[in-house]
Length: 104
Image (tube, rainbow, N blue to C red; front, side, top):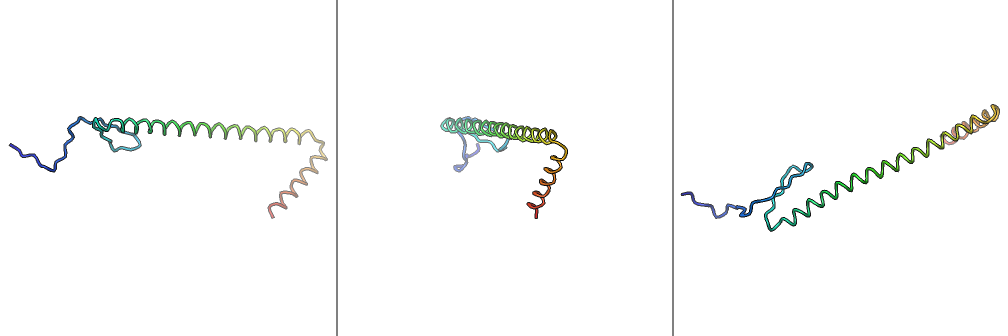
């Protein structure tokens, strides 16, 4: 008959295991700690949903920002082409002078 070691730790409760794809290690829970496991699981789900919703919000704001810039550039282009040729040349020369002054 095999003698059991005094220091051998055994879990008297059949454990529940939670595995997460981001963290490959398993968390085993006995009956006393099931509420902790439920809380961890809920927190993990909340974290994942918050991150995904944050990414959606950032994408929406960035795309609307780009649309505003495209609209502004389009209106400037339409305005610039509607000017007379001599006025366009003057504006182009003044714009070139301003940009060269700023870069110096």
